[in-house]
Amino acid sequence: MLDSRLKLCAEMVSGIGITCDVGTDHAYLACELVKSGKCQKVIATDINSGPLNAARQTSEKYGVSDKIELVLTNGLQGINPENISDIVIAGMGGETIIGILNGHKWLKDGVNIILQPMSKDELLRKWLYDEGFQITEEKVAEDDKFIYSVMKVIFVGEAISITDFSAIVGRIDYLSDNVAKKYVMRRADKLLSIAKALYSAGKINIADEKYKLALQLKNVVENSYVSTNDVFNLMDFYFPFKYQEKWDNSGFLVGNPEMAVHNILLTLDITNESIYEAMKKKCELIISHHPVIFEPLKQISYNSPVNNLIKNNISAICSHTCLDVADNGVNDAMYNIISKTFKVSDSSEVFEISTSDGHGYGKVCELENECDTAEFAEKLKIAFNCSVVRFSRNVKKVKRFAFVSGSGGSMLDIAIEKKCDCLITGDVKHDVWIKAENCGLSIFDCGHFHTENIVLKRLKCVIEANYPLLNVTIADSSVDPVRYI
Image (cartoon, rainbow, N blue to C red; front, top):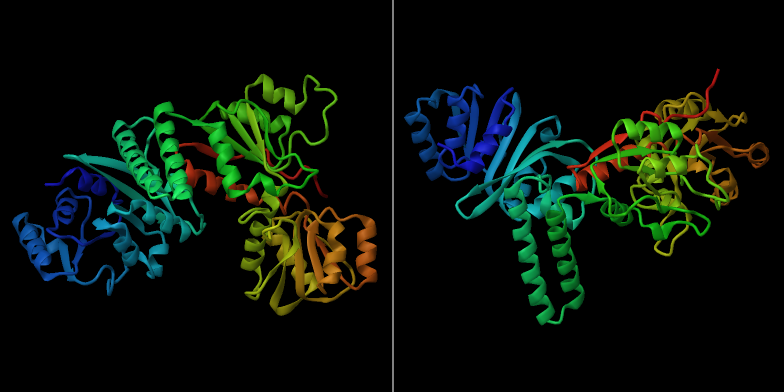
């Protein structure tokens, strides 16, 4: 009854509740889901009465009309979400699918969404990730001369802007699936044709972008692996290494840039313990926030982390100050936690600008309602999962505050200059506490570790969204190195 693309759609349906087949046409998918016993009930919708009449005839032909509810409607309009576990939208353009999904908040409550776009699938993928959805599974089906992508999607709440490469390849297995490889190569050939036309029209810059993207697509298929250099370029795209301070040492610090990567370990610091964990998990690459090589090395001892990385053939990419200041980096991770804990006004500004394009460290924000310092500290402790939050003893209400990740006590003068009531950071020295007290400003020390380790979850989402075939884990050994009693 079903062609290859609809069979994939049927396979991805969970069957735990009611499935809604949007744009059902002849209701072949709906009938198969009921006949196979996967679904007890299917709601089949279409915008036109003609296809819906055809759907009725199909359901009667296969004797399942009592379990298929036919609804004449535009997309999901007027559909009761109660007990709907799955949504299937197949055979439509990517822009149409976006229009159907947009604005239905109930789709964010764990609904399993299966999508099969006929066109503009790269636009659809970008929209999904921008809106906080995630593609958890994607396969391709070949019917005659056409190759179709079918994706399983769920809302996770982490909005990510994916690269043009990822928007084209999605989550398909372009490393081992021959049909998927053909799918990617066709996209590459199409981009090369577009690039050629753009070159002829004198649009050199845009043509170069298309040409480079086509080569990247061809390269990943022909090599059949993702290299450490591919991951480095991804990190540079999201968290540009040009943003790092002159004294910093971020970048590709250890290893072979052309080595194949299958497993990645994320950690705040590269320690011997994290290297041992990477070995156990067969990780070829460790990505850390703090550089494993910071000061000039005069010697490399046998049991140093650098030597252990080299002798175990593990590469290291470190993103320090560039990850601090970039969009969706460490300080944005802090802001997300704070804004979910407190009612913060919409207006905020960069605490200290460090780049020519306005990026920088931390933010200055205002609470909608002022808060007592003790209550503020208690909520910060819960939000950042701290064992301890040290805060100024001078009792004062908090309204306007600044925050900066890591060791930001040296930025006290900026907080004073910006007329903040308090500064949230970590690793505050004694003299800074005294100066803050004399100036009537409160400090909340949530710890260096706790204000920065939070970015690892974000890093994991970014890498998985762009290279879903890689296995990315946050290190169990990435823990606060300090104990408290």
